[in-house]
Image (cartoon, rainbow, N blue to C red; front, side, top):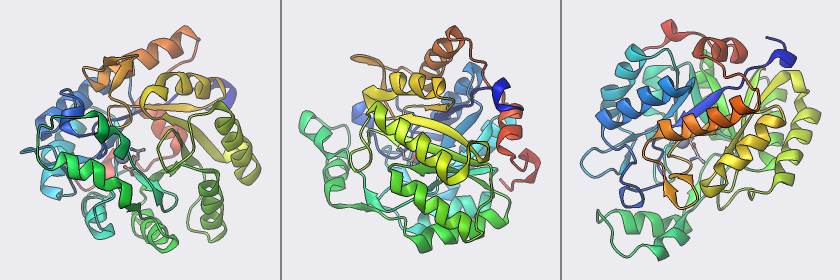
Length: 312
Ligand code: KMH
Ligand code: ZN
C-alpha cells in the first residue's frame, strides 16, 4: 500500500499495568472481561490489540502465562485482530517474568520498550482516599522509586529471541533518545524495517504531551530511518489522548487508544469500555476523511508473519 493511499491502524491497549481497579470500574480485570472488551474493540475498528494480564481476584498486573491462555486464544478465535503481547509487563516484574508468555506464544507482535526510564503515576495516589484493594495504594505510590528497566542487553535479548521467531515489534519510544537506541539496533543488524514506532507522550518520566515533541519525533525518525522505513504511531496518555492522536494522524501517523493509556472518553467522563474510545477516534478520523486499516491491511503494512505462525 503506497503511503499516499494510506490507511490508519488503530491499536487498542485494553488493560495495561498502570491503572488500578479503584481508578475505573470499567477497567477489564478478569480473563472474561479482557476477552469481551477486546472483541468489542475490534468490532469497533481496532486492528491491533495490545494485551497484558491481571490477576482476576484483585486486578493486580500479572505475567502468569496461565492467565494469558484464558483470553488470548478466545480473542484469536473470535476476531482477526493482530495480537500484540506486552514485553514491558509492569515495572515490578523481572525480565524473565515479562517474557514468560511472549516466548511461549511467539505472537505476531510484541511491545518493546526502547530504553530504561522512570515511569510513574504516583501523584494520582494523592487524590484517592478509598482504595478497592490493599495492594493498590503501595503499588501506585511505590512507582516513585522504581525504574522501568530496558537495558541495551535486555532489548538485544528480546530482539534475538522473539525476533528469531518472526515476531515484530511495537517499538515504544518515550523520548527522542529511544529513536537513537533503535538506530543502534538497526546498525547492529538486530532489527529490519518496517519499524512500527509507537511514540509516547504524557507519561511522567518520558516526553511531555506537547505538540512540538511530536514534530521532533517525526523529524528525527525521518532523519534516522527515512520515512518509507517506518510507520509512525501516537500514544497520548490520560487526557491528552484524543487531541494528540488526531494531530498525529494528520502528520501521517497511526493511533493507539485503550484504557491502558487513558481511563477517559472526554473531559471528566470515564470511558465505559475500550470500544468507546475506539469508536471516538474512528469517528474523528473518518470525519477527517481518513480510512481505517482492517487487521489484514495492518498485517500487510507492518509485514507481520501471520496468525497461523503463532503458538498459543
Ligand atoms: N502503558 C504504556 C505507556 C508495555 O506494555 O510494553 C506502556 C506500555 C509498556 O505499553
Ligand atoms: Zn502495555
